[in-house]
Image (cartoon, rainbow, N blue to C red; front, top):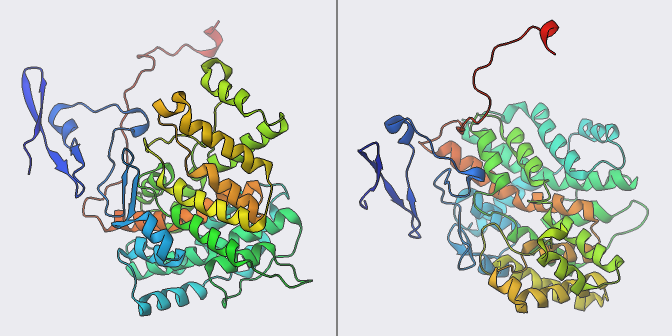
Length: 429
């Protein structure tokens, strides 16, 4: 145990334990600060506050490192499929051949939605955002599966975990079919995870649908690189809601809502909208780069920089290769991708971007791949949610298994009015 840090307060010396993680991250344990001193810390947005210890994901933003359960994201993306990565995140180890087959079989058994859930979709407007549908239906699952809501029963948690992994693609595909007016397509359990989703998204009863293997590979890759990202906004939301012992469906529904925001999961949608804005304005990349440099312009260049990464986002490197391969194969001459390439060149050479380490992030290329596959812009964040689900599940389970679990209850520093006297309404001027 390293020597504690010390704070001098009112001539009294307070010792703060120093905690060191397995990758030598150092932190100050202030969990007893209030009881010892009567003080709290103030950290807007929790950017300097660790809410928990975790064994799930390691992220080093300075060096551009991302590892799931110790495995580099580059190796997982090259050698695993998404379901294997789900198993790794949730259970803590890569599966054996028997374990992964049992896991796949269990997920296949839960891909169908209860027929009564289909009627939910009749209540949504045709132009409803699919993230609203996704969050609502996931929350509604708790009313259909009341046999697996106890967060303290490991078997019930496992059943709910498998149900969510299996049903989220079905829920998402139905949301898309609702927006197009096409009939819902039932899952086909002889297909793999990504094939099944594409089948439910794009097949119609009147003709056969041929699944493009390159689309499957690209989707599998995108889901893997989105599978977890440490204590981000949506993961922290899942943990916070789950800390109250809310059931798993309610906790994941809350995470979906947090992911919806344009500063989080909605960033890839915002990035594509920005590229389309540039194209509509004649494709003048320099104009928008200059606007991004001008603080008074009010314009923000989406898809560059990251709250955590101060180096090239390793996920962006992986996705860029997949994007190049897919577009070359499809021989698509897409002005959106051409503008994206021009912006990337600027970001990697312009001193303004280099000095500020505003590298292209994961949102920059993911939207281009989704577009090439044929997925509409409003569904981008939904795909992010499907990818992030195993990370949410892993963190929810880890939190409940922790001997240090407590209900999350942040403090505040009050800055409002001091005590005031109430004046009767007839006497208020």
